[in-house]
Amino acid sequence: MNRVSTLPDFSRLEVAMDQWSAPFWQAGGEHRLVMPRCTACATFRWPPGPFCPTCRAKAVAWVPPGAARIHSFTILAQPGADKDAPPQWRMPTLVEFADAPGVRLVSVLIDAPCDAVAIGDPVEIVWQPAANALVPVFRLRG
Image (cartoon, rainbow, N blue to C red; front, side, top):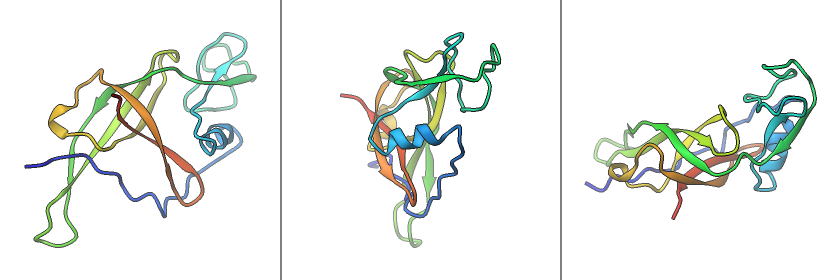
């Protein structure tokens, strides 16, 4: 059976944004991934919020988090459009970053053979359109 992870339909997804997450979504609109890092103690804050969880400072710098790898994943079968259609395979994935200790981003892995994915595999970002933003999804690198 050809089991390859597919892209969910994000076309109607309304991404919730607030003053703390807006820089993430604005950078995504430019196909750039950035994460908030405290300017006082260098702790990455994810999800973004008003205060650093380590030192309680407010100021952040939005910086690239480095190379991405799979921290965890699962494989889900989505029923086909009708009873005779084959299922589509989804891979919800938790991604971690080399330069942002403790930061993990929930996303999906696309275009990957389900039997060839492993924890620790390097991945690259692919930006997909939603109703009001570009959302980050990942595919195996190389």
